[in-house]
Length: 531
Image 1 (cartoon, helix red, strand yellow):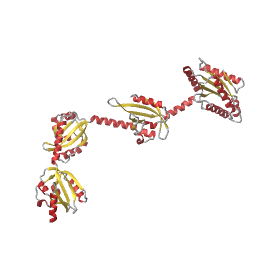
Image 2 (cartoon, one colour):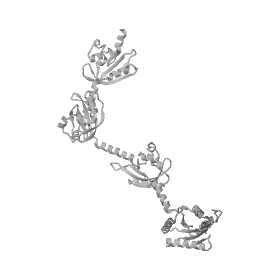
Image 3 (cartoon, rainbow, N blue to C red):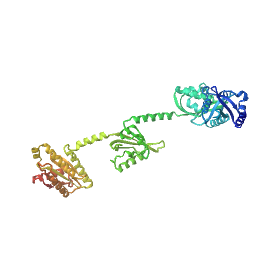
Image 4 (cartoon, rainbow, N blue to C red):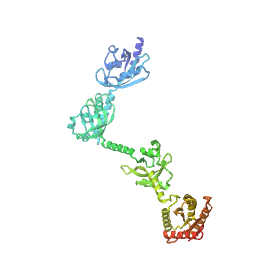
């Protein structure tokens, strides 16, 4: 008893409602309360002691009480548990209460709480004040409702296409798409019962008067309107946004399904999007590419000038189309037919680049093979007669434009027929291939060598006078004569030399060098003659 009085004094010192309860026969039974709590529920301690605490705190849930859950947690813990719940207390009026529960050393639970109904009312008053400010805001529909509409602004009427009189005969649920009705209905009735005061942001599909659907974004709050809890909603028509998002989604799906590589970069060339085709072709994961610059693909096959021209074009807002040689993660070269398109925002400011690329490596390699077949001699792999004719045309054009002299050497393998007749055509082929290899290895990159026909070859010497061409021809003659191709036979060549002269045509030039070669053979072979 002494301890009890001492205990009572301690809980009476707490400036809140306090209950002490004990778990007896499966219930949390009240064993003590302070004077403030007794006054709040207007009951004597004698009548209170022994009651189930849940008979005092009647939770609106009607099933598993939130308070009961908290009491169970506190029963086996040293922690303090808090609660913030609406419930009926004694007078059957729903009020909000905030409090804490803690286990005492003897196993009892102490529960102290306070009524926060006034705080909630102040929140509601603030919402009502905000309503007054925004109810006539352009583009925002406003409504207050319970199981029917109590207030609707003009914007919402315009959005839905109904008059106020027509809406009076509809419930808010009538306007919601069927698949959303159940969730929306539960949310509404939780608010009307004062169980849900959270602000909710939801996207809901509504039906207009004409039967068409619109997508809306709702901000829903619980307010007290005309003395009762109601739902307050601000509504924005987001149909255009949703349709655009759907288009964007379809476009993104198309990007992923296309056979072309597609990537998007910012203005500095940093990658912000790649489709799966880029990953497959280039060998990098998306994580390895995003945030990196497109220079990660550089092959080293293009000059700085090439890339400067590319960037100059797209930064001016112009489309760039070209074949680019890129390098995969494994170092493989890949030819891509690229189109880089600048993207502008609504204000016309350049904001990004979209690049599409088609892998044309196979086509390029095939084209080169065909070009080689068309331009190269199949046996010796040097230029054929057709290609030599093209090169002579090009050298003549350069002479006329830049006044660059050039010379032509025509070779003939001496007694080649005898080699074929004596040792067979295979040996003859070996002689032809070895001769062209010697010539190819001993010319500059700017010079050209090719097979003119049979055992005849032509070398075109860029920017070379006739005197220098004669010396070069003599070097070739000695090189071939001293080269041991096969111990069975010795190879020599006769060489005709000429240089381009003013007003020469190709035919005149070729006829003169052919005449020089004929003269070299006529004078005994294995010699150089210039005309």
